[in-house]
Image (cartoon, rainbow, N blue to C red; front, side):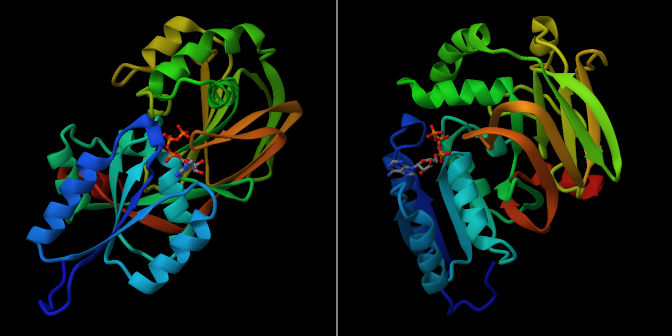
Length: 306
Ligand SMILES: Nc1ncnc2c1ncn2[C@@H]1O[C@H](COP(=O)(O)OP(=O)(O)OP(=O)(O)O)[C@@H](O)[C@H]1O
C-alpha cells in the first residue's frame, strides 16, 4: 500500500463486457464504490476484442496503475499479462468468464464483496508463466481431446459451462484420438500415445477437474500430463481432492523446457482459447512471473512450497 498519503492509489479495471455471458454492471458499481470510499483513482477499460493490446498498452503507460483488476476469463488475464511482462504491477482477479482456470486455482471466495477484498488486498502469489509456441500460457495448454472440445464450443451458440458440456458428446464421437507423439526434455526423447497431452502450470482446469496434483504456481516448473486413454471412472476421479491415478491412465513429466512432436496434426489450445491444429509444441518457463492478489492462506501455502 502507498506510504505517501498525497499520492492517490490508482487502479485500472479491465472489464471484458462479453465474457461468460455475464453482466458486469454490479461488480463495476461495487469497485467504483470501493475506490470512492478509499479516495483512490479508478480508470475502467472495457475490452473491444479488436485492438485491446495496443489500446491497453497505451492506457497502462499513461495511467501508471498501482493495481490492475480484471473482470473476465483467462483470455482477458492473458491480455494484461502479455502487456506487463517484467513490469510487476499486482493483478486482482474478478472471475467472470466462461473459463476461469487461473482464478479456479487461486481458491477465491464466492461473493462479489469477498472477491473484491482479495483482488484489492495485500496477499500475493508470484505465478510462473510458460511460453507455449511463442504465446504466453498462464494456466493450462493442451493438444488433443480438450482442445477439440474447445474448438467445437467456440463454434457453438451456447456460452458458459453448459455450452462446453453440450459439445462434449459430439466431440467424443467425431474424434480420432489417440495420437502418437514424442516428448523431449533435457536432451531425452520419449515416444508416447495419448488422447490428451497437457502442459500445466496449475492444478486444475476451470471446470474444477484436478488433472495435475503436483502443480504449483510458483515452483519454476510445469508438468507435462500424458492422458493415455479415455477412461470415465478415472476422469471422474479428477474432480476429487488428492486423487491418485493409474499409470496406464496418466503419466506426468515435470520440466522447465520441453518439445513435443506429433506424427499428425492435432487440435491445440492455450488457456481456453483454440489455436488451430499443430504437430509441434515448444514450451518454456519465462524469466518473469506475474504478481497475483490471492487469499491469505493461499499466499502462506505458496510461500511454504517455494
Ligand atoms: N467487446 C468485445 N466483443 C467481442 N469480443 C470480445 C470483446 N472483448 C473481448 N473479447 C474477446 O473475448 C475473449 C477473451 O474472453 P475471456 O477469456 O476473458 O472470457 P471467456 O468468457 O472465457 O471468453 P470466451 O467465452 O470467448 O472463451 C478474447 O477472444 C477477446 O478478443
